Length: 117
Image: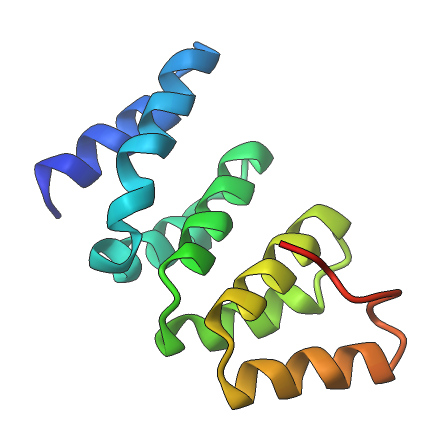
């Protein structure tokens, strides 16, 4: 785990909203470099819903096919905000499998309308 990742996660776990924003901003341009760590943090985090949303947003920002299984899993989440982040991540990924999963979710009524990023 890199110092940047540790520092960003430490900031994102603080109570100060500006610190949390700073941690997110620190990781955003480097999301692809830290994808494995982001996925691990997302899967471990249960208490802080806001942090889970940001982690999923960063995972989507990585635009990596490696994120597809998690994004598809969250596409079926009961929580609309997590589902929305998953849609955004799949749209950013923009691969044939990602587009297929979005089409399938819309056809099955899981998503009401196309999402815009």
